[in-house]
Image 1: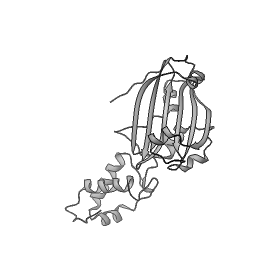
Image 2: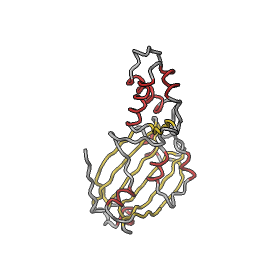
Image 3: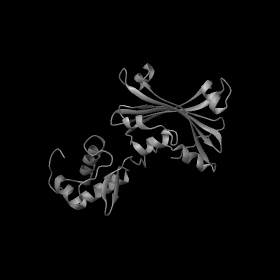
Image 4: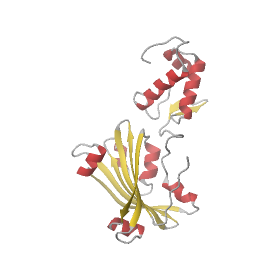
Length: 236
C-alpha cells in the first residue's frame, strides 16, 4: 500500500482496493499464489481478521480462488458474478436439450486489416488470428462465429489449431477480461451467413458484436450471427 497505516486505521476496504489493484494492474497476474494471511497482514499493517475479510470479499467478487491447504491464488479467469458472465455457446446449446457440435470453417494468421486496427487499436503489421466457425445444435447450425484475436496480447493463440475446441471455449479457459463492449444489430445475410446458417440473401439476421480487453489491451473481437428462430433472454 502507498502509505502504511496503523492497525486501527486500515480497514478491510482499504486492503480490498489494494488487492484488486495488484490483480488488475500490478504484479499479481492470473495464477499467482498469494503470500499467507499472516505475511499479508504484516505487509498491509492490519490485523489478520481484517486481511481475512478482505481476501474473502475479493474472492466473492470472483478474482481469487481460496483453498484451505492450497492457499489463495488469483483465478485464471475471474468469475464475474454481479457484472457479466462470458457466454459459453456449448452450454447455451446443451441447455436446450440438444447435443452440441462444432465445425471449423476458416483459420488464418494475417496482418490486421485497417478496419480492425482502428477498432482494436492495433499497430500496422500487427498479427491477428482470424477464425470462422459454426456451432451446431443437434446437427443444425445454431451460431456462426467470426472472430479476431490479437496475437500480440495473446501469443498462445498462434499455437492453437481450433479444430477440436472452438475459440469461445479456449478464450474463456485461457484469459481473463477486465472490460467488455457489446452491441446488438440486425444485418442482411451475406454469402458467409447464407452458406452456413441457411438464410436467404438479404434476409435479416440477428447479430451480436462483442469486444473484450484485459488491462487496456484488446484481446478479441467477435461477431456472432444466429439462426432465424433464435431468442435471446436476459435475467436481472
